[in-house]
Image 1: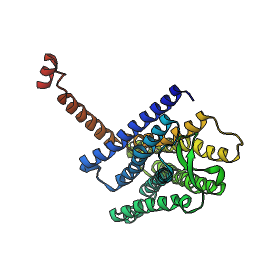
Image 2: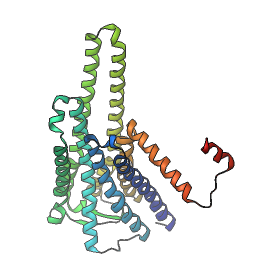
Image 3: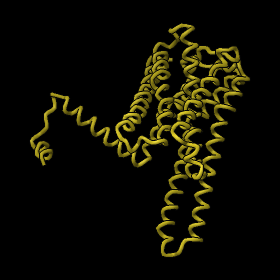
Image 4: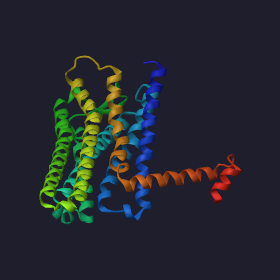
Length: 320
């Protein structure tokens, strides 16, 4: 590859990392700044943001450095560590997505059991179990089942699928299709429940109050449907190409083109960028908090810049 192409790849991945880092750090800042957002349901959002921060702070920068160098220069031990962190962040992120779907399922469908099953202590336990599961599922390559190595097509260290086909099947079934099926079942049940509630309102509620309630149920159903499509669509779009390259590495006799390898990796990394948008910005409270945070940052940056002086008109508007 030419130097220009390598720097282009590094530049794109750097941009993804910066946006992802900004979005996920902002999630923590707005939750810590706003007491109204400090509630049980947002623990799961922050847990997902933590997994995405791991990707943004560790995985992406190391990959950018390796792309620029066009080879792995950090040594074998670092390759093993980085491969482990790569797979850990991937699994924890996917499991966090599934946990969010389960939480929403209980919140909407099994609302009678919600408070009992999602007390603060239990929520902390669920989050801890998510990371413990991710840790256990990431260990096999270090224990002899599969192995980590440098993947030149993706410029990073990960599992060498061609040498470990059985682990590839395990990863795809347990860590990709497993969470995908879980999310699909949860959101489908939510959709069916809201449709049933809509029909019940139409049949049982008197005509003079039906319109307002019907409108609320319809709005809620539309919101859930849109979220369902975005969540599942983004998850599939980001990770299915990556999972496909795993099997192509095993059965395709030739090395995959660079653009396929690197493209699938960048799509997977982009999931960390999309998650704050899907799970937080669509929420009215989060959207307002985001705007307030960025407005505050903008004001502080403006005040700290001595080279910029407000015009007389701007000063007048501020005084008013």
